[in-house]
Image (cartoon, rainbow, N blue to C red; front, side, top):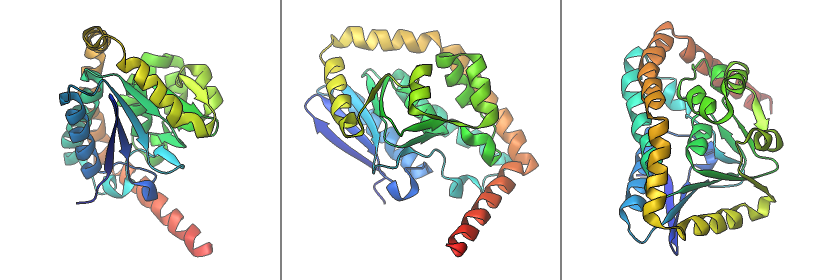
Amino acid sequence: MSTYILTETIGAVRRITLNRPEKLNAWNKAMRDQLIDALKDANRDASIRAIILTGAGDRAFGAGQDLSESKSFDASSAEGWMGEWKALYSLFRDSSKPIVAALNGVAAGSAFQIALLCDLRIAHSGVTMGQPEINSGIPTVTGNWIMREIIGLSRAIDLTLTGRMLDAEEAYSFGLISRLVDKEKVQEEALALANLLASKPPVAMRLNRQRIAEVTQQSFDEAMQAGVRIQTEAYATGEPQAMMEKFFAERAARKVEA
């Protein structure tokens, strides 16, 4: 099986790396499953006090859902697909260890959402972030939930309906990026911040994260439940599949022209 997730232990910090750089670290089921295993392992290990999540290569933290996988979905796929996301997102929310995202390049769609589920985000000028799912015919459900919690409904509507990507400076002004540093210092700063968090009293850290999750639990559960209904309706129309096929056809045409 391909290794889509890399792990490294640096003192009390576990660094987890999304490892599909040739696909801009886009998710497929195997990658999601491996990330779930890596997060569970980090939470079980008493010597680990903080986690860093990053992406391999210098082009992307993550491009979101791999459309090569989701283009084959139909209405019957929605419940299982949303169940996979709920399992993954719940691990970020319920982790006893603080999580720092070290962003490099693009953070789009569900990878953008994962970045927002981390406690703090380190990024550099050149990072772009956003929720472009509408451009693939995929309605946003969990995306506008997490954006609303962090940046408010008005900005969530903007990003959901336009599908536009924010540059690092605008994302920082919105509060989506916690620290903006030089590109070559992203990993260094992320490790320094993770070590700071690792030095805090672990019980207080766990209980603080627990309470933060409790505050948003009702809206999280509602978003996940709504996701099944909304994605079922969307895929039943065939619009997402058609938009993704169009994307692949246009990309293939560009390759021929090049």
